[in-house]
Structure formats: structure tokens, C-alpha cells
Image (cartoon, rainbow, N blue to C red):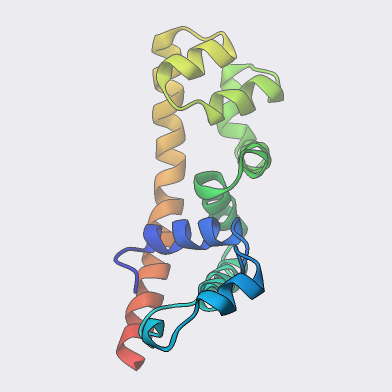
Length: 160
């Protein structure tokens, strides 16, 4: 079903944000005909069940991997919380930037070197070094999470 672990995570977060039934039930029933059924298509209920299984799997992963997943695909509020938790867990490595936690969080949330420099007051060169350090911290976490999810996807495909 999924081509990559990142696609599975993105699907789960996107599905979680949608409702199970998007049109009134009576309209759905009235529009449904026998020629429209297809057993190979997932219903909204199936999609939400699949997303629930992905979140259940994610909840059993180490905390840093969960933080990374929410940082990557969560809502903005979840991304802010994940960035704060990330800073708390990596305070020793990030304390050399001598930024208050709020500015540090905004720097972590920056999408580019320019955003990081603007949010934190760093020079662009220092912001670039900050982004490189973030990438160095995130990379092993991403590798573990995506590797474990890839193995889970392969195992499920082989069992079908």
C-alpha cells in the first residue's frame, strides 16, 4: 500500500486530520449504487483504521522517534511542542548558541537558513551551522524510525 515509510507516516497524519464521513449519511446512501462498489478500494473507515495502526506502532517506538515524526508531519502546535521537547533532550549540544528557549524553538522550526537567522538573530553563517547541527542530530533518529517502519511494511506485505 505504501511506497515508503515517510509516505505511511504522512498518510497517518493526514488521515487523522480528516473526518470519517465527509458528507451527510443520507446523501451518501442516496448516491450509492450497486455499480459503484469496489472491494479493492479503502473506505474512510479503512483509512482511519490504517492510520490508527500506524499511530499504535509509532507509540511503541522510542520517544525521540515519536518526537521526530510529530515534528515532521504534525500540526503546527504539535511541531512547536516537538521542537520544545527536542531542545530539552538536546540541550547540551544546543547550549553553545546561547539563545533563550523560545528563540531556539523558533530556530528549530525555521524552514531555511534565512528563517533561522531571522527567528534567532544569528548571522546567516551561524544559522547555517545551526541547521547542519540539527541535521546531524535528526539523521540517526530518522534512519532508525524509517528503517524500522520499512521493515514493518515489508513484513506485512510478505504475510499477505
